[in-house]
Amino acid sequence: MIGAVVFDVGECLVDESREYGNWADWLGVPRHTFSAVFGAVIATSDDWGVSKPDPGFFRHMLEVTPGSADEILYVGDRLDNDIRPAAALGLLTALIRRGPWATIQQEDPDAERVPTMRIDSLAELPGRIAAFNETA
Image (cartoon, helix red, strand yellow):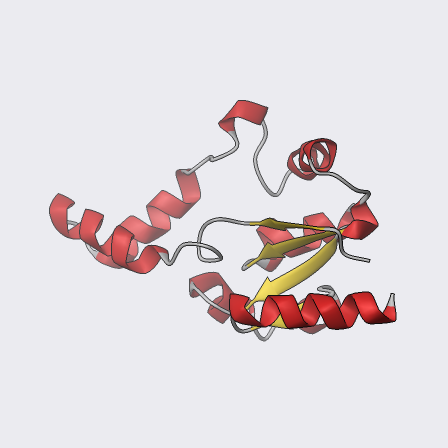
């Protein structure tokens, strides 16, 4: 049963396109360039000293999240950074179809094979979790 849900922030909880676009406009650089460079250098897990997709990030997440790996659902928009490494450690995963990485990676066979579930919207999540837990 799913007892805890952990969310990736960028593109899962926050639509970054408007925010990044405003920054790019202010700096006078192309929006796609700013987004690509920012995405390549951001490290929101500095406090842990490790960032995704390093398995250490997900191990630390397991230490601070109640429940075992098979009771935690990790929601992310990227196969490479979120879903594959989380699943490799036994976490349940939800791949959300939104943001640039979801578009880029949507045809990858792992997009269907690896995640526990695929969703188009966070609004689907409560019902999908309830259905999953009914069969668990």
